[in-house]
Amino acid sequence: MYKIIIHDNKSCQIITDDADIFRILRSTFSYKIAGVEYSIAYKNGWNGITFLINKKGFFFSGLINKVIEFLKDHKINPEIEDLRKPVIINPEMDLSSSKRLSRKNC
Image (cartoon, rainbow, N blue to C red):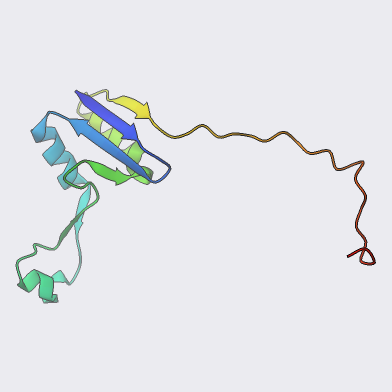
């Protein structure tokens, strides 16, 4: 099972039971910070790698196309569930009959 949930305009989540693909996906979307060897955190045991997908599968929605492309390259077609609320468009306002305010009326 491969499922991508779009929670809102900022975050998405990938849910899968395939641990190997998830591990490869996380390592693909990660990077090592330049010069991290000199930081205190690195000296305390951090390996300097920043993951764009966390251990629970959450990632920023800007990566969704790249994540889908990665999965399709591995012959995986994920199910996509969109939990965002639909946009409500207000009716247009007719301003033609309203009084125009002049500087004297303000």
